[in-house]
Image 1 (tube, rainbow, N blue to C red):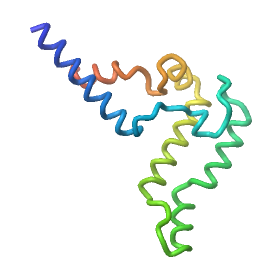
Image 2 (image 1 turned 135 degrees about the vertical axis):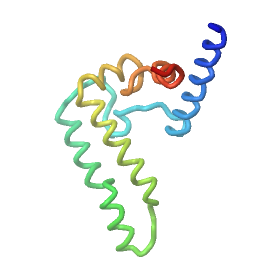
Image 3 (image 1 turned 180 degrees about the horizontal axis):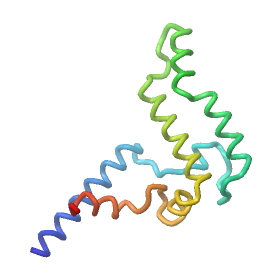
Image 4 (image 1 turned 180 degrees about the vertical axis):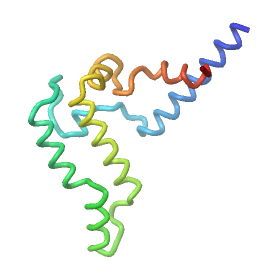
Length: 125
């Protein structure tokens, strides 16, 4: 029974890993790169707020929608614009909120350890 549960959890972990890689396009989450700032390990600086504001004014889905309608063509698909916006917000939150920043430093992801997420899926509570 124990070996069956262990195998089940490992299989679930692999499924979660594959899904995370698909969601990220196989890339590692780097909030500094997403905000176009130098990765020096800094946290909650005014530069982060400035860069977020600058990028938010460029990449907000409503701005993209307006530009697409003005040009009469869909230069940027809305699903990509929304995904980019979500990643930008996640990067900003990671670098300005203490718990997310600690998870990012410790696990490389602001959502925490991936194996813990896999265990939550594998083992019902």
